[in-house]
Length: 404
Image (cartoon, rainbow, N blue to C red; front, top):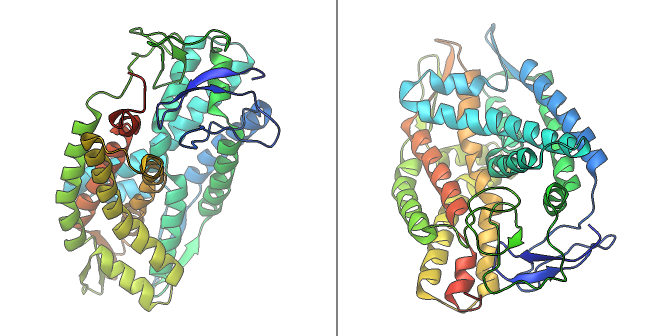
């Protein structure tokens, strides 16, 4: 990218001229300060990182993840064993599917799709094929949670160190390296550049008309039409029924938040005895063990973040409905914060899945999941879906700042 292009900010809806990239500079929206990336291409590095990540993903799932030894009995699990642990309890099958999606399917699908896009651009593959792949990779990005799974594994190790001897397998270290490579891959990819490589934007010398707007999928600014010229998806000025859908999901999340925190999430049974524990009980146990950093992480991610997400999304919906013109930038930043931290609420679900599969020693020791983990995972799913369906541009539209 060596020229200016028209760009509609996906957070505030401002149609603006995106300047050419400069070294060591990040381009941001002139109104809400959303980042558009640095505009530089690191395709060679991204291809190498994507290929290495695919290899590490395979190894992380093949090698033993962690093992447990207690009174002569041993058990070894893999990264995907948490899915089997939850699936053994039929009432918790939705939780098993959630763990399967965020820990296995979504990360793998995103890696494969990104790899095909990066290598396809090099070899001149079909533009429509690459556009569909890149759109799919962006859709599953919020649901790929290998970094959350790694933190969940660390919490699992901490919870078990008083009960039994826990050994870390090669799969655990491989997952750690994979998370680092995935972070480097994200930094090496500029999505605006990838879309421009698939299909360049029109020349900036052509001023957009009053009916022009950006595609919500790929960002291409174009005249009003039914189909996007670049990605082929249906062209919409705003997400349909955004406020109504978000409000319904937030209300459902509030309803489920209470049982998610009142009902037991796990029951640790040792020699036939054990008491069920809620999410807050798990935080207290970590604090009693003086694991303050992990206790803080679990408290913030599993108790505070879901509640703040629900209140935050509710505030955004109400303010957009009322057409409030105050603190527009602040509310847009609130939405970005909710979008950033919301995925970390699933750490407790992944901990429950790992513990259920790891501690299966019959009469000696066993961990059984409770109905609370189903309610809590439902809250996480609903809040993430509500965040995805909410259109922050409606905040600015309601205040009368955007054309049309």
